[in-house]
Image 1 (cartoon, chains in turn brown, red):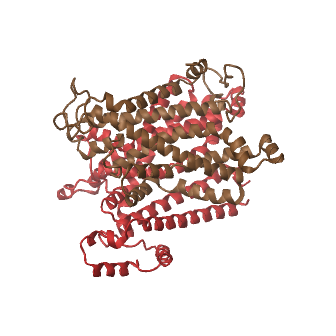
Image 2: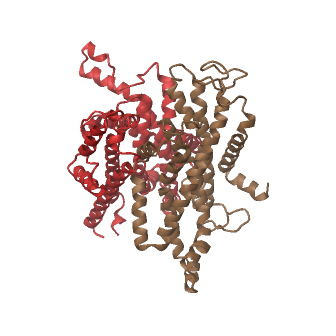
Image 3: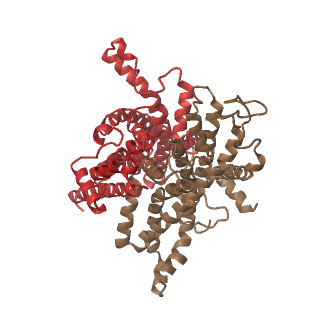
Length: 305
Length: 322
């Protein structure tokens, strides 16, 4: 661990907590085949057996161990989250960069599409697309990714627009650099930190949307995800049987995972925009943004990450 | 840009969005494998002749362009087609559930807004103290929980004490209830679904309100107001809040679509016979006509809400016509 990381953790405790939680979930998910106490399809006892020493979170409606299901579910939830976020970042980033940098007609057309994507009620649309496309993990990922790039495109666009007016971009253009070169060499590197921040929020959002798709019974029927566990508890009448252990853990797990993404995202956001730290109405003290520890000022776009 | 031009532009863009939505709506269902005649619920085992008759009846033997023009023409006349399942007009199938959804969602929204504003204001005001981070982390946690899970938790906690399914007691009508009893019964059935929506959204709104307020509290005029010795509450009410309303209102209306979506999940959890449950059942029955109509209806509702937000900006920010 470098000194920079320690400093970062002290300045953004939320981000540090988020990183640790997310890291732990990722590690547990990767180790699922080795650390789960039972098989993910194995019947470990009776239907909705109560939690005990040997079965810390009890059994679900098919007699499968909840701890095992949670570990395996993390894999699917994380996979959907990261893959869908990747699609959203690639599509949203490209659209935003093009619209913001090129401007004019391109901007008008792309932004009309983006506005449409922002306006449509996304879960009903998911419902329709999932009905039409069929139920598989790939289609779930594609649907979520293709439905969540719009917000991202908006933010990237406004950043790229301001970028176009920067002196170094104009200079590059003046000395004859092509649009492609300017975008990839001068604009993109400045947008990357912003994209990363948006990406981590997109991961959280994708995981949340996956629970909705699973809840409506449109997820991959063979994949175990945390959303699926919530749906399973609902469909298996866990409420009327008082099986709280089948309901509470998957929801808390989803909450912890998304919250850790949000915390990391907010810490990055604060780093990119130090102004978020100023405030003049604090009762006890006036607050002014602290300078970074090494004394150098960060540019608003946060070139140094 | 004059005010008239601004309004005209906004209305035009709303109309374009609706047309675009209708077009995509049309295309998505054309992209479905097979067509309505092969997926028609009653037609799993029917004869080839009947299938041909259906294709003729539904206009599927015409060209795609022709079908599109007919579809748009029908929409223009307010005809959303007929449900595959019941053969009743989609419009009639949707209005009843929509009327059930509106009061429930409205009540939930109100609940979430009041809570969100209270928490967000306090959090921004007492920034950096316990009174900031405790409600802040609380609302962050609430805002990331799946709404269907919040619903299940409410069921787990209150299923004995409050009605947990449907929107009225089916046995009430045998006891010859007064209008007051009916009203109380309806309200009781609304509590849990509304509470789920309210809880799911108050966290999000608290965060929005807080970040907008934090933004304006960092402005120099706040420092000036404080230097003048104005009372904190007055600074908050007269200087910070009005200046934060623009982003807050924008975000509120942008979240509208998610609320509609959330009501779909909540209604499924509580078997509340609203538009969400209707769509959910349409998915289960593969009732494409109903799905298509319901989706368009929701889109139009959201476009209208956004238009309303745009028009509201006049009131909030006179600089907008620059």
